[in-house]
Amino acid sequence: MVLRVQGVQKAYRTAGETVLVLCGADLSMTSGESVALTGESGSGKSTLLHLIAGLDRLDAGEIWLEDSLISAMSDRQLAGIRQGRIGLVFQQFNLVPSLTVEDNLAFQARIADRFDAAWQDELASRLGLQTLLKRYPEQLSGGQQQRVAIGRALAVRPKLLLADEPTGNLDEATGDSVFRLMLDLVRHTGCSLLMATHSVRLAEAMDRRLHLRGGVLT
Image (cartoon, rainbow, N blue to C red):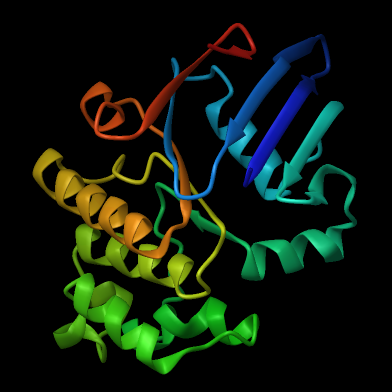
């Protein structure tokens, strides 16, 4: 088991009320599995991904990554998990504008001391980035930037890739192309993929689909 989410609860408190977003979410994933997370806007998809990544704190429940109880870790420990064991891809590309494509690809791997030149070359090849390595993010299309973001996340060979609407800022054809590349790479590496998406079509291409409604997964 790569990921185990048990009884996770999360509420956000505003000046006038408490909004319960997750109220007992359960999820498990095996190694190499791809799971689509669907649900209406505001249903808590991004919240759940942020909790799994350790970017936010849950109110109750447990989250395990393999044999590590990540929901009980310190901020410093969670940063280490994100550096080497969990890859993140967001709707916004979040590339470093002052770095070339080549350096953006290597950025996370170098921080985690897991840079592998041969794997970086293979990623660049599989993602069609070989001729773009010396360019800067502002010189790339949206689809090209997202391919760099995917490569950066997979450069450390994470156990789990979390993708939050990774095609949301792309047109349909470009989004489909980026999604297929990401899914092929995940299958090639044996990494597990949990992807939040509004697209039923993309969700159906994955191993399994879970729907988030009323704070629970079905």
